[in-house]
Image 1 (cartoon, one colour):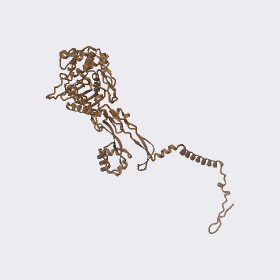
Image 2 (tube, one colour):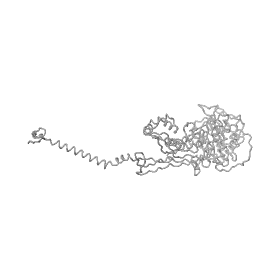
Image 3 (cartoon, helix red, strand yellow):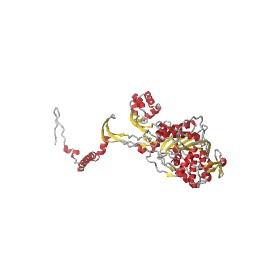
Image 4 (tube, helix red, strand yellow):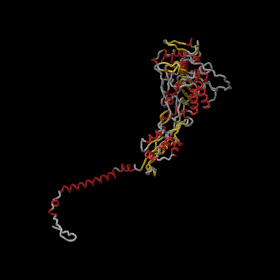
Length: 592
């Protein structure tokens, strides 16, 4: 078959015979066409399967991926619970504070070095530190968190692109240094790191909430979507601490440490009726809200974490046990001839020699020899059980970080000289809080009660150690020790009768005792007939020439007792008479 294709202008055309073309004449194999159709079918099926997966099976996943492009979850931080004193006064609370952050890729190109230096000054930063921080991440860096409103106002006035702020919660501590060791502090993430803040982190922190919002390309919230989860604020914690007593106790121990050029000091105040801790003050201290120059020495809650040999404060317990078991009466004479006693080749000495002292005078004059003679009448096990029942060698049941056990070795390991020295406080160790708790045995008519950092609705059950008449008899001895002729007359308080025991001990250093380093303390109660408070005072390493507990610690006891009883509206039990004091009577030094 041929075909003519006339050209423009006429002429003949070449004829093409398709039947004779080898390419067109060959037959296509059937499998090729079927393969082509199969491949088209498979592709179409894959497209249908993918569409079905996207539209039906994987809908949630792809919906979420789409929402991520425009839906954002905003955290709604919970407000941390407050810490309150027994009267509702704030010891710790959270307030809103601006935190400054930046997008370095926006800030760096549009600001000059001079502007960034001005930003550093507004933030209270070193310019070099700011420049280094801006190199960490081009998209986000914290510049300074939880700053004061005035600081953010200065930064905002610079009008720098890429510098922003977000509101966070910052912890405030109204009592500052006075209550620092009780309250503790948190980090910038509102996590407790010391004190009550640490011990009750779970209760105080609460639970953050969240809300989902749609944002535009500039980061502005357009609308809320989804369900909003409201934050659950942390629980308030009410302590047994009285902020006024705490502040006064802190001032007095701070002044005593400064006056006597001491290393440190502590005060513990207990409510006799409930075992509540009304004050727990230490010096040196720190400001929980400004910890830029904080040291480990400032952090130590010495009243709970430091243990020491309690010295002569142990003597009243030995006298009480001797009375309790009927071995002696208060007027029983004890031979203290020449003021020395040799046991196992070791000599026990008194600071002042007395030929004979009654049991009451052993406490009044703080005789080591007298206390040792009383103790050596007791089997070691009896004396160990006495100390153990008083709480020595046991950790106080306080939910408070750092509380220590102290040391009371098993009685089977005691040597005679060790039993003798333990009668006047050498050879065992305890914290100031443990000693204060042990003195509840005298204040509570023979019962030792557990101490608490929280308000108690009912007096806790106690452990009976002495009969009521024994405790009352020892209180009279303590009154003698804190009066004229005793080792602590400077503990006397206007309007209130007081009883207590001073103590002074050489500090352990290496394998022995330092000859010129001492701890001084005074522990006592008031009023004597019906005690309402126990106050324990410790001054560490006084170095201004005076170091006896009756001289260094007793005046702090006197001031704190008087202030506390007045705050508690306790009626004076002594007639207050006008006095003209020309010179303070120095305390008689107690024996070591």
